Amino acid sequence: MPDKHSPLFAKLTALAAENPTFRDGARVISDHGKPPPLVALLAEIDNTVLERTLVFRVDNAVLRVAAAGRRLRSVIDITGAPDNALAGQMLSQDNPDMVNGICAFLAQLCKNAAQVTVQIMPATPIGSPSQAGISVKTLEAPADPATNALPDFLIPVADAVTATVQIVGGDITATSGQTAALEQIWRDQFDAFHNRQKAIFPQPDAPMLVCLDHALGQDKPAAIASIGNQVIVFAHDPARIGDIMTAWHSS
Image (cartoon, rainbow, N blue to C red; front, side, top):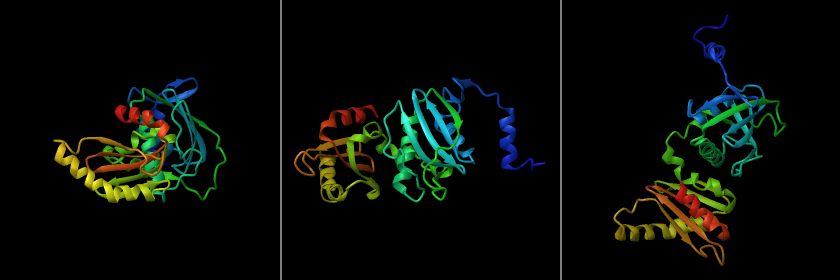
């Protein structure tokens, strides 16, 4: 008989006591914020030991992920929501950019979701068993919303962004794409620009988005978004600047 104080016993007891609700053949795991959508989604991954495909419906979005060993191994695909650049890739806990990117993606997807359901399906062959993925503990780690606040607004327009440099407290914390020119903008131009902002505006640390036309060459713009001690410098498709501005104001 299992130890009554063991985590396994507690989990089996909780499962036995549940009276699950189903919708269209899928089990409802979060309804109107109870439990919080992201918490419910991560709990399903944490409960998955054998390799399985988990199909989450988050309101109108359908997210398929590969999970095993209580880890998220891959985002297989997503429909009904903006795609994610990491979809189809094996995830690695040793890659900080992947960890930050998938955490921000899941947080944005689950934000204000009215209902989340899950279906457990057979495993979808992807990668090799040695590629262990990202543990739920690591996915839960970015508990401070301010840490990932800036990348969130770019998620809906991720296909328009070609490179990023993220800075927190003056230190570069994450990069993606070709960043040499973006890092130079950060090193050579941001401090002087920010000092001028302080001299002109009474609230220099208020959220700010500045577009830099031709910063990377003819018809190759960049932009700087900042709030407090967080900054992101990114390159983008010039034809999508309207979408980026809309995403910024909506965030």
